[in-house]
Image (cartoon, rainbow, N blue to C red):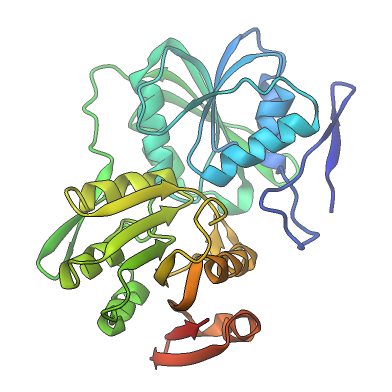
Amino acid sequence: MESTLTINNQKYQLERYPKTKDNTLKAWSNAELLVLNNVISKDVKNIHLFNDRFGFWNCTLNDKKVTTIWNYASQQKAINHNKNLNELNSNIIYKTSLDNLEKVELALIKIPKSLELFELFLQQVHKASISSTEVVCGFMTKYFSPSFLKIASNYFEISEQSKAWKKARLLVLKQPKEDIEYKECSNKIGYKGKEFNQYYGVFSSGQIDIGTQFFLKHIKVLPSELKVLDLASGNGVIAHELIGKYPDIEATLIDDFNLAIASSKLNLKNKKATFICDNNLNNLEEGYFDLVVSNPPFHFEHENNIEVALELFKGVKRVLNGDGRFLLVANKHLNYKTHLTILFNNVTVMAENAKFIIYECVN
């Protein structure tokens, strides 16, 4: 796996976090390199970074004052890890996508897979823009969508595309538009006569995911299962529905994506619930939970990767009590049972249809 590169005669070592066994993956893309090559000589001291997933820009622009807009707990860990690995100043200014920014002179964006999240990024930049604000967006050419230009045109007068370089391209935005009306960057999703709020970028923006709907039809909480963990909780609909049916449970929701946690806080307002933004279960008490429920992720941007889910399963084993259960729904083709049977004493199929399967795992 390629993990070193040289920029301006300085060598950097950059690792992915969480670690991966896939040797084709690295901690930066040619799109990020192209953006860096475009801006590294600019006389700008303050730079805002969006979707710097593993800290490539944080490391290579360490001599600048950068503000990093973070979306994932694992992203913060990756940035801190790689800055420490390269013995760089680790004083990082972090903001979320829901925070107000100070004056934005130059913003760098690796365009995310979610076009809604891209729009949220641009709206956040625009709110703090000045007449000379410039936004340099990078993307791999194979992922180009005309929607990039349409979204950009909502906020900037000028959109310039670069020529391709190593299968990557730039979209450079200039001249922020004046007097625009900002969108509310969230969706309202109906489910069983209720309305759920969901910030842009959170999984399954148009409806409650069909896998989750199938899962909710079959979950039954036992009387002894009072401490319940909703793992990879998304907008919180699973915990919300369980609390509605079983009001005595104490729910904990955990998700790597901070906008998912922010959405679930909206949806479970005034409910007996705890919210945690983290990418693993390492900080949770061993043997604490009676029940863990999950619709675990296997898409990460444009990658299909079950490694993160498999590590989460190990964490579930640790935080469940001796009689605890783990219920999860998954796409049938993922064949999680092979991995689950290594960890749990008893793994059975609770329900299945043409596309999804629900496993019940007992310690």
